View (cartoon, rainbow, N blue to C red):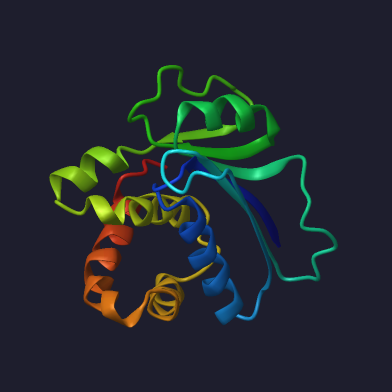
Amino acid sequence: MTQEIIIAGFGGQGVLSMGKILAYAALMEGKEVSWMPAYGPEQRGGTANVTVIISDENISSPILSNYDTAILLNQPSIDKFQPKVKPGGTLIFDGFGVMQPPSREDINVYSVAAMNTATEMKLAKCFNMFILGSYLKVHPIVKVESVMKALRKTLPERHHHLLPANEQAILKGMDLVAL
């Protein structure tokens, strides 16, 4: 089993940390992992993406030109990465601020109302965890328990009080996807 994933959006949406948490969770489950971030000079507002590969076997290269799954959080990312999803693959997006939703019919497309739900639940800082939960519903490649262990490891201790809110966001994100 190998899952090749691109996560892309604006800086500040938690794109890189979502990829890091997913990678850590997979490592904790004994899987092979590659995590390769790419971002512009702007920390917030610029574009950012991360490639994550999770496999039961050795990973030969972290460089990919096509993906099994694309998690795309803004229009520029949809425009750039939608064509690079393998036929039969998965595209997950949040429609907030997206003018032209994905249009391919040879892939599985899931629209997730993560931003609206995060705002309604007053958990806007957990936006990326709603998206991650949605991904895990579609592709349960790691357990939620492993994701929570990864969060505990990657979040600075001063933010550990946010762990229950992040778990709530992950679980709600799972509910936002209609399979």
